[in-house]
Length: 426
Image (tube, rainbow, N blue to C red; front, side, top):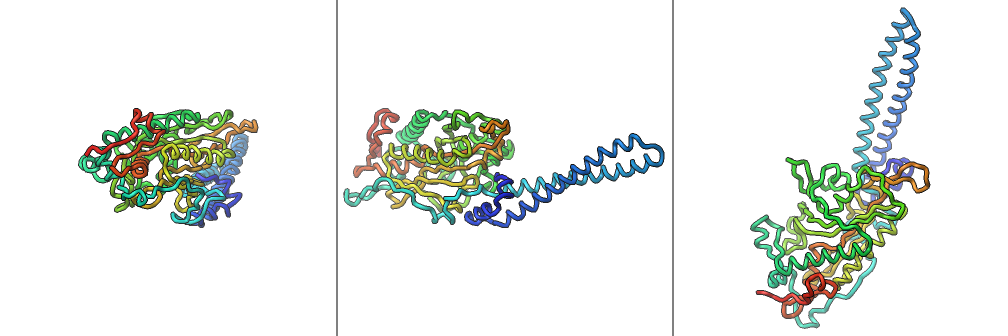
């Protein structure tokens, strides 16, 4: 949730953010009007309450007709107090609803526009020239099936479209990726976490995942619980309604979980293979830090993602995602996109988002003011992906050999029991 003080003090910044995202800037005027109505009603309520208390003393001292007249005024005043209290409460509900409808205010350097308006930050590595090597690259599904690593047909038989089995070396490859991610995270000081994949509505809402994208989330109405699409959701609620200690630096967690996404609106997109599926596994970094440290921490998360991609020996590029392609909680997001030879283009493998104070404000995560005033203030949250099932696509395709085998990246081999080559089984 955005800060009402930001809207009051710098409404133009919020308007610019709304325009950059392609959202309605008129919500700013509606928020300011509701805020003024709430404050006016609250001020009137407090004045009437004070007057009501004064009348109590007069009534106690009065007698006869004077007392009767005062009691009539007290009754009228009491009704006015109730009406003002109700008006203030209604205005506050309207204000909170409006504030909740506004996505996070983007940072100054975030590009404006939609999906194609990203800014390229860097390209790392060079895609292989398969033509020069004398063979046409196979796609990841063809490779996965020949290696006995991916079984889409039985996945669909058991669970429907966009489900799959990872079998044999496919299962080992995913586990190796996730274990390597956890090992790197622990070395960097992250606390590993196995997180719940079902959360309460207030946590899903607090993380910012059901305001505008509820149709993308699996919901269990009988239990009033949501299946999470990332461990970011559970980790954002981990310290909900707490005052945390950041004196020693950021709190960093690495969450391993299954993830579930309905992929609403993706009909006909990436239907082949495991690029866009309903269930996958992921190791997600999640950080609580001081707001003034968030941008530097964002760069650190990106660097940790780069380290994982380099270990997997993948060509990739880093883009600064445009505002219109950001999720609601993100003020800025960097995507690392790996090269997919069979498609001749880069596809997203990781992303890292700076959510500033948006999630923590909703979930009540605070710290003591470092200036020693004794007051509390909202902290910042950030997230970033270290490894996920989709990486198998890039690893299989980029490290395939002419005979249909796949070379295992050197850094992954210890997590694969020393296996250095995946060989076809059919």
